[in-house]
Image 1 (cartoon, rainbow, N blue to C red):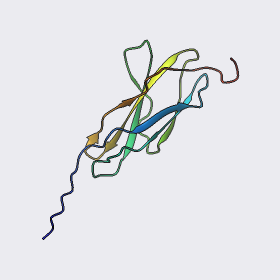
Image 2 (cartoon, rainbow, N blue to C red):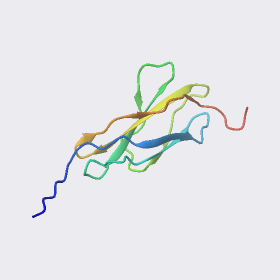
Image 3 (cartoon, rainbow, N blue to C red):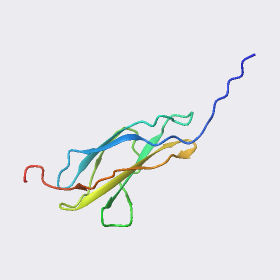
Length: 110
């Protein structure tokens, strides 16, 4: 007799978080799904931002089902850090954070 065990848990951390398409007011975040969904499908991803000098994280979205998100409301000249976490029906997995700041800037000007 074979016994099958299905472990249900929180999702793992998203992978390969990248910041691209930076403008003076927005940027695009992309990532890959966690290695483990915790045995349940990922419902959404939650994204937060803060300035490099700041202490408080600000929520960027109510929920995002895709693995890409355009972050609005950046202030030109500010350096930002971003973090993201996945959610399944059991709750939120661990956060993944960008290591370096990304400066909101006009992509045409040097």
